[in-house]
Image (cartoon, rainbow, N blue to C red):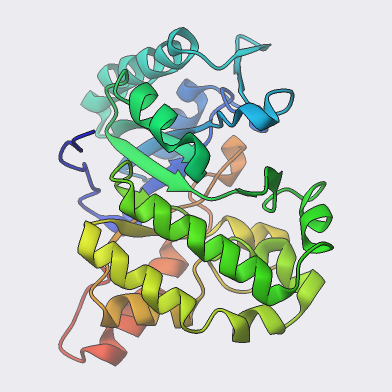
Length: 289
């Protein structure tokens, strides 16, 4: 599948490129409500990234969306309904100075790569955000599932498998950007402790190098801050490596699942990344990717 030109925000600190409206099963709020809130906050660009979870091994859990308060199967028709809703919002709010983009956060696994390649060609998207949420069909990003997987693996085994899948996602050609690069720390840090931070060394670098080779960027995701973490995702040390290797920081995203979470932490993360960039290149004056 040939990727179209990625639409990226013009002002990274005034854009939220990871937003889940009520179409995602775990989210609430209409597209219209998010757009109105964006204008209140002075956000200039918003990109909706409804979940696209299609692993047939999780058919009783994931492949659904919400439309008008009803849970319906994930399908070309239901996704198009979402896309149309966002496009209409773009027409409505564009004159007010809000650029409205449409994307999907696509859960990747190697066994569904060709399925995704076929399905994603049906949609006219501005932004394809890839994510690795599941290992062995278990969601390590979900509080009610993560420990089930962690109990069966050492920290090293978990990290090795995560980065194996992530590398495949990067090489697939399906995605513009990879979401929350070290999402395993969300619940893994509490389970494994600092061991996972030491164990990622070497694995992170190889993944970042593949991103440069395959023209895939990263996002700075502030959603983990709501889970009690003190650092955004990926962690500053990974962002510093990414900057050194010239990986594109394409966007910042709050990973909002409620309207009141929109834009949370983005300005702070932008400034923090700017400091990292200045550390690497003292002449740099911007955190743009």
